[in-house]
Length: 109
Length: 114
Image 1 (cartoon, each protein chain N blue to C red):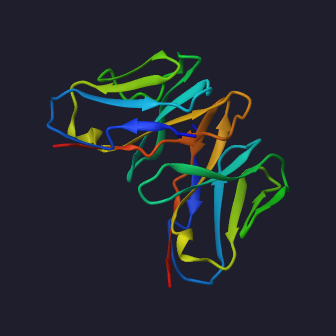
Image 2 (image 1 turned 90 degrees about the vertical axis):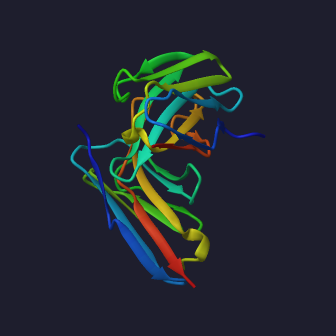
């Protein structure tokens, strides 16, 4: 079955630093999605990518859909304490979302 | 507007007991999803409904798990009998059919089976 591997598994950074995380798949995707899960809450959609090579920004967040359609990365610039949480990539598979393993981000002041 | 509502938020039960988790989707949403999240397996889709009809239950772990959606505003996930390995956070999510990626998640139910 499809697998979405995210790296790194966890990150510990200082406030103000930039963050980069990525997601790779064994299959070709038509859509890449990035979600964030705050502690004690459900995931919330951050960015959706629809075609290979697409680069999309949402505030301090930037995500790109890899040319091979098997990977995507998410960058966060100038991190702040509220960026803490788990970041998931996901793929849409005919109504269903398949989630990656997640990257846990911790931001220290 | 109210988001997805789940109850209870926390449930502690003993092995062998029946557990029922409840979900109220966002009004007007025609898709409802049940997920389970654990450290070992991450976020897994268990089952989803479209217009109250179960579409795909291939993620349901075994016969001890069942889900129903008697109407557009209510769904249940039942575990009978519960086992310690069922301990996890269970999320319900809903979306409207015209917006395929924007699933709205509830706050989750943290289940502990002792």
